[in-house]
Amino acid sequence: MVDHAVRGTGAGRALVEDMIDWAGRQGYAAIQFNAVVDTNAGAVHLYESLGFVTLGVAPGAFRHPQLGDVGLRIMWRELRRVETGPDPEPRA
Ligand SMILES: CC(C)(COP(=O)(O)OP(=O)(O)OC[C@H]1O[C@@H](n2cnc3c(N)ncnc32)[C@H](O)[C@@H]1OP(=O)(O)O)[C@@H](O)C(=O)NCCC(=O)NCCS
Image (cartoon, rainbow, N blue to C red; front, side, top):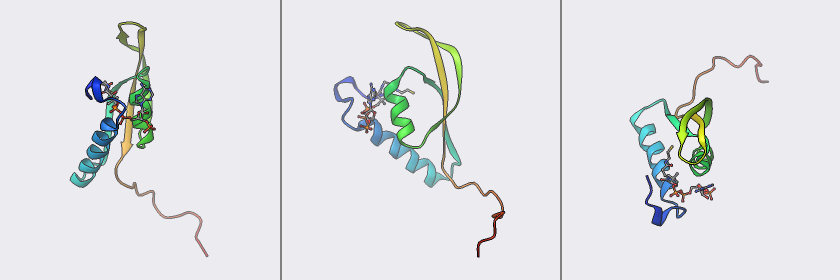
């Protein structure tokens, strides 16, 4: 969690970039966040800008103190290239 006083100054991006770099060097295949609150626009924007995609949303899984029951996203980012087999269209 980034301190309120310095939010919006790049600390969150630096932390997530460092995590992606570290996990890739360790040989992890992917990173998955299991509970990203759907209304957390800052986090969702940050993760999507760094290549995360939303695999699904558990509807109403989080009781937000102001917004009531909101969804929880599972967000995932691949760290290695997945082999998909030979190219079906041979190149000339
Ligand atoms: C989410 C969080 C980690 C972001 O950290 P941060 O240091 O403020 O983020 P940065 O300054 O690196 O900004 C990253 C991007 O998010 C955007 N952003 C930040 N807050 C935003 C908001 N409330 N709405 C929309 N975009 C936002 C920034 O504009 C920036 O985008 P850009 O680089 O395309 O301009 C921080 O707000 C935080 O700790 N929140 C509380 C805990 C939390 O929600 N953690 C995530 C749980 S899944």
